[in-house]
Amino acid sequence: MDNDERQSYTVDEALTSMGFGKFQYLVFAYAGLGVFAEAMEVMILSFIGPAVKSEWELSPSEESLLTTVVFAGNLIGAYLWGLISDNYGRKKGFLGIATITSAVGLLSAFSPSYASLLSLRCLVGIGIGSGPIFLAWFLEFVPAAKRGTWMVIFSTFWTLGSIFEASLAWIVMTRLNWRWLLALSSIPSFSVLLLYCLAPESLRYLHMKGRAADVHHILEKIALLNKAKIPNGMLVSDTIISPDEEFAPPDDHIPLLSSNKIKIKKQKLGFSSFPLLFSSRLIRTTLLLWLLFFGNAFTYYGIILLTSKLSSMQSKCGSTLTFSENMQNSSSLYLDVFLASLGEVPGLVFAAIIVDRAGRKLSTVIMLILVFIFLLPLPMLQSNILITGSLVVARMFSFGAFTIACIFTPEIYPTFIRSSGAGVANAIGKTGGMICPLVAVGLVTGCHETAVVILFEVVIVVAIICVTLIPFATKGRGLSDTIDGESHSRPVTVGQ
Image (cartoon, rainbow, N blue to C red; front, side, top):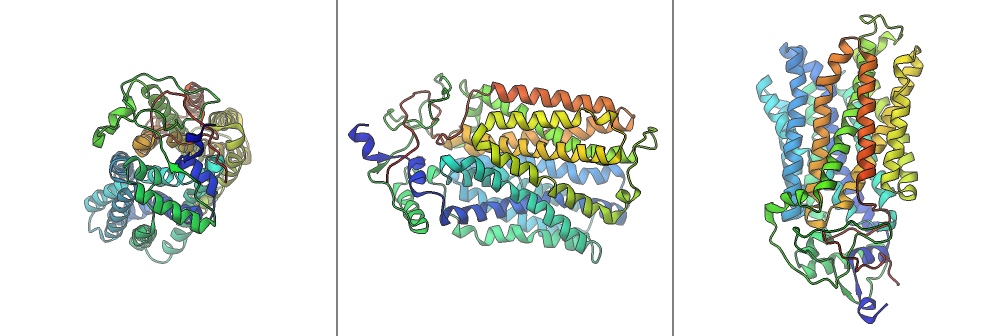
């Protein structure tokens, strides 16, 4: 190692040197609160729909539209917050997300009409397109060696938010009404807003913008809270080179993080950063990730759909399935959501165990194969217990696959388009969730259970193929600030 390398260190090397400590736990808690709030606002749709339908005498399509507009708003939000976060800082994104979600979420509790509720929930949908932003921000503070495991643990905030919302709905809806549930569910978003001033800006974003003093101030805070020392030497970073030049993806032994020796060529990206997702060097990866997210969301929401629709269609289709009648009463709705969300925890535990051992790509493939296996015998099963168990396990592994994909995606993209890339991929996944009912409900209603399972299996196979074709493996590698193909990199380790 030459003298220049001994006297310099990267952001990843600094984080590795100072370890995962109290500072990361605080970042973990704040980012997790943002995802927790998002999960509550999404899951609330399962509980207010029937109540609003009854109060305002809505048609089934009008009730369904309450969910559709939230997903539509979510598509806009994922794109909007990704651009703001990448171009104006992660904290600016947090401020917008928390302000809109909390204020509009509370206002929706006072909706005087169906039209006003529809409009306000669409705005809430824009606000909650935030999960990838919080995830990418937390990711940028985690040492590379522990990133996979901690990102899976971070994903439990979504499950916890879902479980908490089901519990809250169980208490509120049986004693008060849906307006109280909307109001109380906005409290976590207000908490994100109140704690906003305590959240540090992303080290990578600051360094990319040349704000060296701010970077050093945060590194000092990390060192103080973690009781560690900042590495000796000068902080250096990846360089941003022209996105129009071709690059070869790194092989299994070359970190994604490039060295500081490459000559810097700065660019004014602004809101033009989004087209970089389709540059010659990223378009293949971008499209493969979109197909992966679409397929995973299509399957995940399809499994949820099957859980409810197979039971409701059993008599019409002459099925021998014997679902218990108490699944149809209102009280069991809260219990069903609670147990289904709780059932995702083993999938997250399994993902946490294998993600840093097998790597992101192989872990995702394993999860998807397990989903395929547990869905395959579904049309032939006769027992209620076996059908329910098969669907619960398939959902568990589907959620695990989605979680690993959410880790993998921001690791692939460089800092200046990380939030945009992750946000848009997640939004494309949401379209899978929107389209799935339009396709699958007709098949299930027409008593074509076998056809709908075959459809999901085909989608899973396509998703598996897409994972294998992604030309990156990010296990143990530092995050990148560039999209160059030079191999002038060094391992993400640093001496004390």
